[in-house]
Length: 228
Ligand code: SF4
Image (tube, rainbow, N blue to C red; front, side):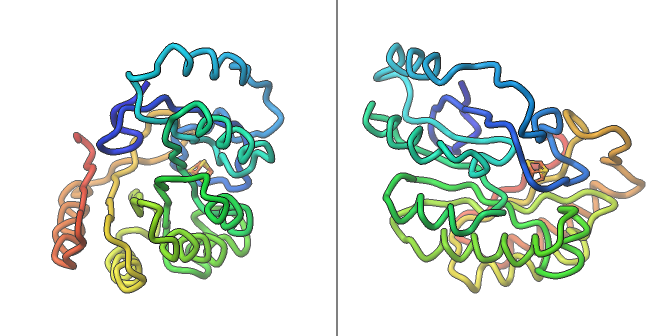
């Protein structure tokens, strides 16, 4: 149950294991291996939803990377049949799958990560070749479907490209027509061993980036700082 996974909605969040990328700050590092056994059967999710009619607005599929799961479309369709809205958290590694899900009208809202400008810094951050091209293609998929609400998220940490590239990332996202943008300061909770979340003057540097992005005049800008 969550009041923050889909801003403005009360939702149940389903965490799907598996992700093809390896970000240093991954907050659900323990479930990025797709081979780990599941702990909640899908039948239990439906059972819970059956008891939450009128209490929940929807279901958010998160991860890991939910689009890694081939059964995601069927699960989303089932959630809709049960009368709930569907949200998705994605980093965009599978633009074709995302396009299929959005095109079938299965998704009402997407929280999509953009980690850097496309190119080497994106690959460094996600740990996989071609990651940036895939993520930015996925962003284009989301923003070209106006019936789908969205929040574009940039997460920054001291050893990542976000501080240097963040303003240009936000400018390009704005130019593509995004209405909602969130800047998030990575936290150590759930991250792989060795992740560095803080550095001298880091909070002030991120706050300064937040001020610059806020000036770009998104319809909605959210700053999730270290203490938010
Ligand atoms: S894309 Fe998301 S789930 Fe995958 S490793 Fe990066 S932060 Fe974790």
